[in-house]
Length: 366
Ligand SMILES: Nc1nc2c(c(=O)[nH]1)N[C@H]1C(S)=C(S)[C@@H](COP(=O)(O)O)O[C@H]1N2
Ligand SMILES: [Mo]
Image 1 (spheres, rainbow, N blue to C red):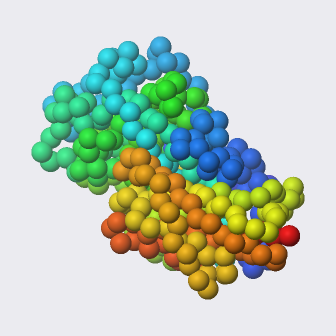
Image 2 (cartoon, protein in one colour; image 1 turned 90 degrees about the horizontal axis):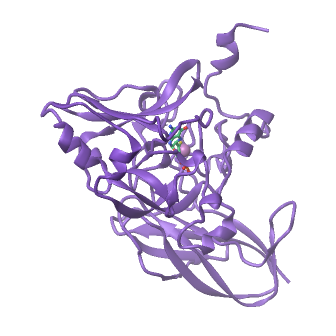
């Protein structure tokens, strides 16, 4: 037994040396599914194959009754319905989203939370109206610093009951590619991806893209809500305040070749020339190179890059491998045009966020 507070305020922790994934983590993983890695074949991820991450419950929002308020440090507060929003200028951006916790379950020691391996990523075409136009209409005060985005979903996290809410620096909120999106891949947003309207902040890790958006509040001081100040921090110890997680670090993923073993997902393929393909992305700058290793990182072969379809959409790559019989662990690593290099080995942090160490694909060549 224990108090309600004791049940729901378990502190963040790191798994012990031999501690496996718990039923609680499995329950999270079953709700928040990843991209099946074979879906790396699509330039644009079919909506149902896009990864999903929801902290609490998917809220029920009636599109007809939905209102978005724009308030705080503005000259003219606004309240808009879905029709008002849809009557505004519309644009579509292709954007790769990745959860900041992607790669967490492969860290050692393992931070206990949503246990992503490599699959918390997807690319969609998001359609909506630029937030900047709305902020201009509302008249942002010259003293403004941050903009807070409030979702309609509520829950308890580390003992703090809250509505999902994130702050964004004003300069980012004013970028012309930041969208209030009501369509994903040409269809109204599905419930799980934020219907009727979500925020899209191209280049940033997933937590910034607030779903089920109902409030935009202009702030004259830095946003100090849970999801910015406590969660999504790069920290080494429990009391280290850490740095905030922002943009997506470069990463390459390999579309696993051959056929999978059902249980282990180890790949089985025939010897000969194998085409290896995959995707690479960065939230800082276009992808500049992808390299592939078939010998545990001993040597690296440059991959051929496909077009960069949009500034923040993943780029395809391919290379050929003359595969001889044996057991291999394939790796890929990306570099972006701003000079960020993807590390092969982990750069550990306590929440297991912004981890871009290289994927490992085990392959048996027969
Ligand atoms: N309102 C709300 N927005 C949210 C979340 C949430 O739990 N509630 N999760 C965030 C996180 S952590 C991620 S990774 C992305 C996931 O977006 P997707 O489920 O559409 O892939 O949504 C973000 N927006
Ligand atoms: Mo996330």
